[in-house]
Image (cartoon, one colour):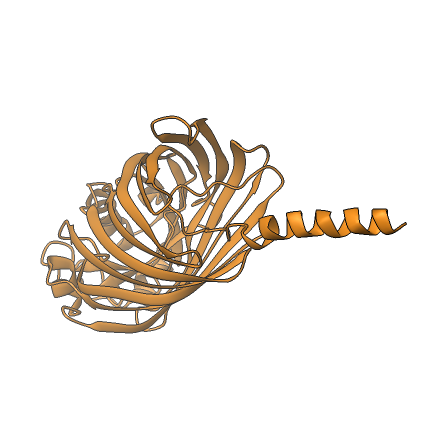
Amino acid sequence: MRKSIKLAIAALLVSAPAVANAAPVNLENPLYLPGAGNVYSKTSAGVMYKTLENNLINKYNGTIGDAQFPIWRVREQLGVGITDRFAVQGAFGYTANPDGDRNGMSEGRVGLIYRLLQDNAPFVLDIYADAHLGGVTPMKMDAMNNKNPATGIGFHYNNYTTGQYGVFGGMRVGHTFENKVTFGLFSEFLYTLPGDNTRITTTGLTNIAGLPYPMSVFRAHGLPDSFSVNLKQTWDWNTGLNLGYEIAPTWTTNFALTWKHHAEHTITKVNLDPSKMTPPTSLVVPGLVAGLTTGMNDAFDEFIFGLSVAKNLTDNTQLALYAEYTADNGQWNSVNTTRFKGEIGARFNVQF
């Protein structure tokens, strides 16, 4: 009996250091991938401040330099390890911008990631493919009068989706040096499918083509309250660098630089039929259709600089504080370009 007790105590003494020295999980690591059976969640909440760009669309709309604050942003990243090299992953985001009167899902993707090369290779190599869920909700735009000398009409975007489904494909490569410094490089493309999931309302218009008629006349002669348009397929791409440094076993900091290219959208079809309308509506609709089916001149690029610091609360949980600054550049009709755009927030990470 005494011998059994001594053996049990000895076993505990041998195993205790291994438990105590178990490395806390670092979900902020640029190369993090869940192990077999592990489930992870990264929940972010942030607030953004931005001022609008000095471009033609803001000039026409009279909004150059307008500040928008607060812009509330939440994001959820989650996944589950199927094996130590293969996992399911997803990311979802929502943005609420009261000053810009623009709210909705700003990110939605779910897919698979596979680690082709492991840590014992010269570097880690992951490949992944995600479904883009931009078609879950339609793109919503309000036609409005502005100072555009060509058409006198512009658009206010009500949400952040293009109303298109699509597919992401990408790769991630990186390496960890002496368990302290980790770098990760990624590059991905997004192909969006063509579709008719974009809706434009006309209820905000006060005039069309400068004609001396109230909008009630145009509506009485066939102008609908809203109509759909078809968008052409697009190719977007993102690429970036992420550097992580382990300050201490429970402290880590990250620096990230990301370049996002958002392609120009093109309306290929306007679902308005002038033959079902009568003058004066039937006279102005062909010009409206012609104006819409040219390129939208809304392409833009974002250059995002990010910095974060994270602390392990337990071996399986982390709290991170982050800050981001975005420089951007776009075509004259992009409502997404800014003079200044910055965001701060917190992220809670957990692995089960």
